[in-house]
Image 1 (cartoon, rainbow, N blue to C red):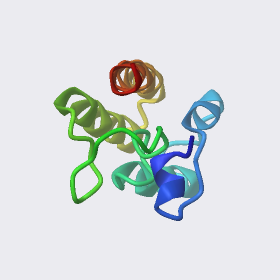
Image 2 (cartoon, one colour):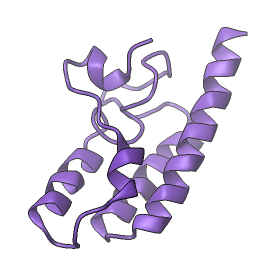
Image 3 (tube, one colour):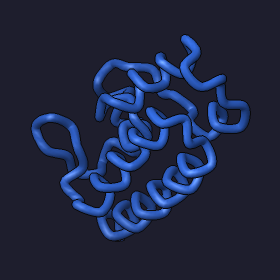
Length: 104
């Protein structure tokens, strides 16, 4: 399966790997991550399976997943790396539930 980012012609970004060794707050790497986390195509939700239903701007139709994506963006912006890890785990958990429902 492709990620939504790949479907839209972007490279996948491994947020788990990024969060294993996050950059210094307010560094260029942090700002680059903020840019990625801000866009639905490259955020944590965008690096999930492309079968997850999305609206015209690319945000997940599922309200919980959309809320978690916004939280993840704020965690990255604030340099709250541990919170971002937790939010990413919740995003992956919710998306697995959605994919299960879509493919059963």
